[in-house]
Image (cartoon, rainbow, N blue to C red; front, side, top):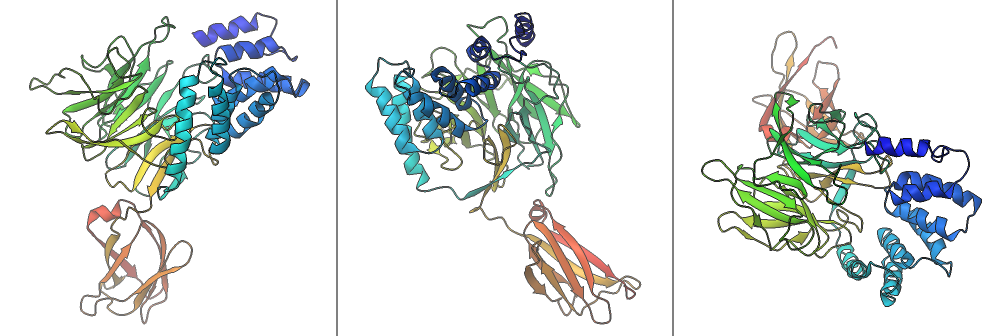
Length: 516
């Protein structure tokens, strides 16, 4: 409704939004309403008219800083504004933050310290001091990067719009994510984006399906997936109630149960979790007995805190408990239980980190209800930008996050991380070759296996007594050449799923015809 009113308002004021001529009032109004996408478009029109205009460069730099279009351009325009002696008081702060997001920590500290040295200039003094510390922490974290690789999930899952909050089942066969793409039911909102909807992707160990809108749970309003139960039987959904309470918004956590292949309409989570404040994310332990969630209710350590509640003998949730050892004066958000039920992942801007929201893990002892020391997940999982969620399947070989990287499709994208130091057992195949006509097992010959780059993986000979080949292969696509005396060379394609290693011994029989 707000978006409709906004469009009508500007449609009736001389065509400011859609007019052909540059009108600075349009840009300022979009900026005021934090619609940085449209403000960016308008300020670009102004820059074409007056390239060195202080106000245009300053606001355009902030637009790039607070969107995921191109953080490098934030530096360009804010630097141009800074070089003007009459620049805004907060320019040093924003330019320092932009330099930080582009990993230029020396320059970032220079501008941030300039801002700190003149406390009367702006209102971000405490944040600037924290960012200076983050710069030093980031340099240290980048000295020992985590050995990982990123894979963009591709155009059938990601779009030019924000795609974020991926949550995966323990067996990795399903993951859910949130998107603000144009194909949903709603119209653009005040910030220039479409309402958020939830999408589902399936994985068979070889291929991922296209992201599919889950239907029932989604409406014309904003729905975000904020957690998934390990077996995929339920998910947790955040729904905001900002309409009508602009100065005092609140949000609740809902639950949706999966029946067959369909998600049922959301229901408000059990009493004791939601309040008339903001509850924004939730995770349930694998045994089902503990809920961890985040809230900005009064009495916490800072902004958003992590809380927990445990199931009572009557099946109801007990009193909520603030997890003080995790929480800081900053924000802690998006807790997610690992499959072991004792490791909790969460995001925070209050612990030692690279800036913005970083991802952490902490160990929990359910028997003593004691929590360990949170550990930063390291670079390049974390960056000076915001990393909000991470979710692991059972094998811990992979994880799912959202990020904006060089190969993104235009905004936040879903990425699959591979932890290169985590080794999985290869799939074990016991293979035999038989005559297609007689069914006789052929005990002579050998097999050559090539990978998809045509490199030889190995030559294999059969057991002289059984005629069986024992072959171990990592996930991938292979070419297999079978040479048996008296038979023509046979070539076959062999796909090994990422789930095959879980199957134990896999028996394969290949039939060969003499006439081939």
